Amino acid sequence: MNPEDKNLMEDQCELLQIKPSFFIRNAVLEKLNKPTFTKTVTNLDTRKYLSELNKIGNNLNQIAYKLNSNLELDLIDQRELTGKIEHIITHITEINSKL
Image (cartoon, rainbow, N blue to C red; front, side, top):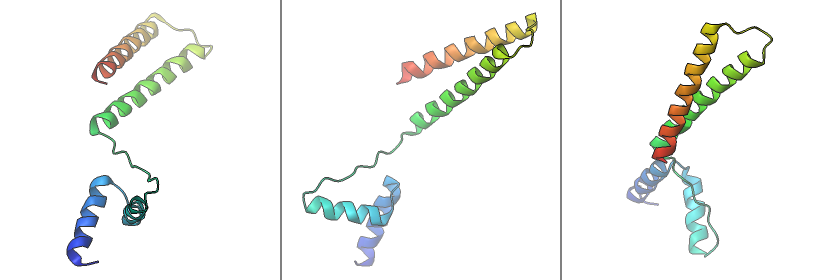
């Protein structure tokens, strides 16, 4: 492979976030008319939404832990939990509207 082709292949691999060996294997399989595996590139917005959903999950776990513990909840804790739940609902609605 000449240096120009090698650089082009490396650029494509970096763009697709795959290894050169994977790229070469799929190129050969494609030429042989065999099924190839496609790599999906995750959109940055999708990563952001998944991160937000993970945070929401953590908040829900904290709320569930507190509710399932045998500790008595005082009024301040109840207001804090209600605020967290409302915040979670807002985030879920925002994420859902963007998908």
